[in-house]
Image (cartoon, rainbow, N blue to C red):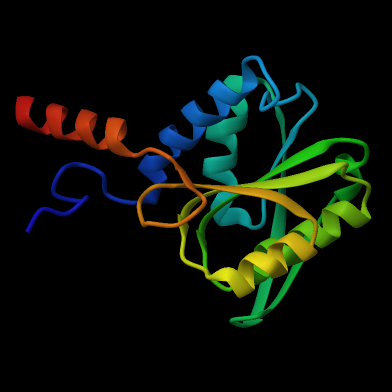
Length: 172
């Protein structure tokens, strides 16, 4: 069986290059451009590596939260300086979106601190219409995810990174 691990993509962490390239494209011109004052946010320490990989090449600031999960939908997110988001657009970065609880809590906290907008970049969107409505009602303007699963938000293609990994593997 061909798995991501067997072709050299051990975990999601290696997919962050796809998100980073996607973010760079949106940094360019047009209505989807990423403003230079955008704050790239991770809801927890696990997300730091992805947030840094996206923000660094774009010269964007980062903010990392601390997450406490008491249950699937019982999540608390704290930020040392949520005020950093005041007056700025925010891009939240996470790996899997299922219940949406982490992103909802983070978005509410950041918007209450004065963020002008919140959108999400994710690897796997595994949620249905009810969760989509909850994300929107929490103030999340848009979710962009990879096309790793069929989902309406799956607009970030993985084909290039998978093809590159296969090509590198075949040369090894």
